[in-house]
Image 1 (tube, helix red, strand yellow):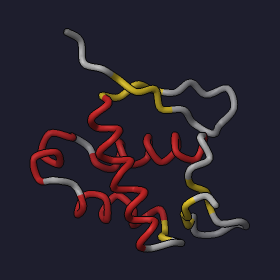
Image 2 (cartoon, rainbow, N blue to C red):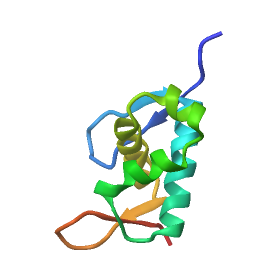
Image 3 (cartoon, one colour):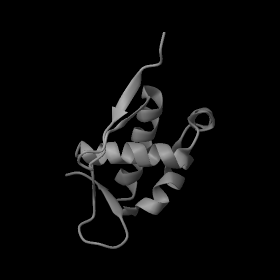
Length: 98
């Protein structure tokens, strides 16, 4: 039976999303949301490290590139309106959507 996958969208218009295994999506999504709940305004550059620290060790070992998965799921969460970037330029800071 093929592995069930989740389509991750991007907020960039015209750019096609990618499909990742559902368990990876759910694990990374949960870590991103809990991290931003604990640390609103977290700089994007710190997100991968924080997510890696929250992942179950077995999931972390099977995930592959944490940075790539965090970026992919983060973009999907932005596209779906679950998280948002701080207004204005400069360092990209992330918040849970209100």
